[in-house]
Length: 502
Image 1 (spheres, rainbow, N blue to C red):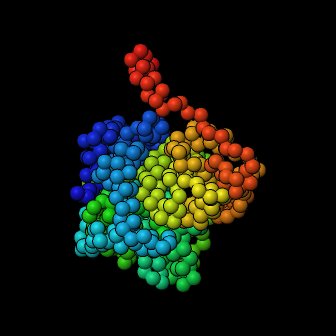
Image 2 (cartoon, helix red, strand yellow):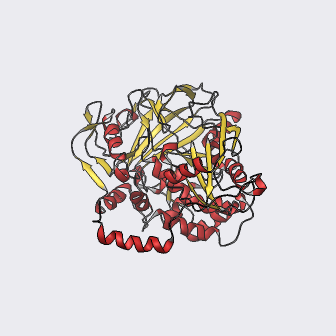
Image 3 (cartoon, rainbow, N blue to C red):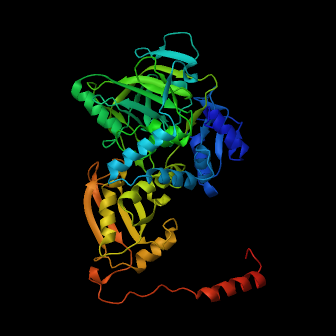
């Protein structure tokens, strides 16, 4: 059964012993982030935190703040009400393998069809809990146009995460836009810096779908409707961050994962639709004729601050929310953080798609230290010369994998989730000149190490065993391993004579 609300999800976490309630006042300025950082770096991601009495500028907020709700494999599985993320990945893989696709577009089309068959497409409803309280903002005065109790952006419990941040940032916003030509919807996640009570920055990066939609509206000269929602089912922010191809509706994936179609309600000041069970909805627009405004700095998932850059301004027309709204948020920074599990879950779910195109791939891992794009480990079943280099080039051509700085390819017997094993093979099996390649391509705009924004170099390293066809003239040695029968005998003896736990 799908979660009815974000509070329903929190109740489920609490029943599993995965939620800690903080009853003491904690400030949205730096304090909540510092507390969450400590928890996220605890073993196995710590616990989810519900700050029941957050303060904004010293004043108590009526809205609790939830953070680190997806920061462990247990809680990621709870998002989908599954035993594990692997279970969902296997189920999704079975669906897409029902009819072998001929390419990535065919695979994604099949995935879309499979999800539609499994659960109905999103359905439209006239009313939703997300609009129980309505507040129309006057962009000139930043004050309410009515007597409702809904706040402006200034007194929502939005965090200032790190000391050098340019201000408060929405960090888990699901941003809804629509293609001007096709009408196709996109739900992305782009951080939003609060400028004042009715305006934010809109940090949709150069290669993101939201930015492409923005360019379409800029060419047309029309104002671009944008709606942002926070909360509701935990599947929503996951799908907003998932590496779906342009044109595949994130609400379709969310409906599949939550095992129930999503009820969508039309916004009050534009024709976009948002989940009826969301906690907060912020409606507005981006004016393409308006000059870009400085956004940042922001303590980012790279572990460093991204510096100030110009981005579009999002103007707020209306804020609505549930009567019992909870404000979900997160922080990013030096790993490990909550986003490691979000990214890892996406990789697990979409691994079958990679394997459709590259059947030799055994597994892929994004180690926490690589902060998503910086480091990728891939294991393959190698059968012919230069196969590792084929995989490197193939992955660099697939969606957000284009941002990967380093790809290390190892043999299938290596556990790519064990960084020690990968580094051992990297050091043992490579000649730096022969087994590495450096190329250029698109880079993450958040990468501060590149000379120019959005453009950088990449390195691939072949740490697999070498074949004669690769110009390796010598015999390849065997890996040192204990005799299997002797190992079993000594394991029994060890348990008998050596106290366990030493």
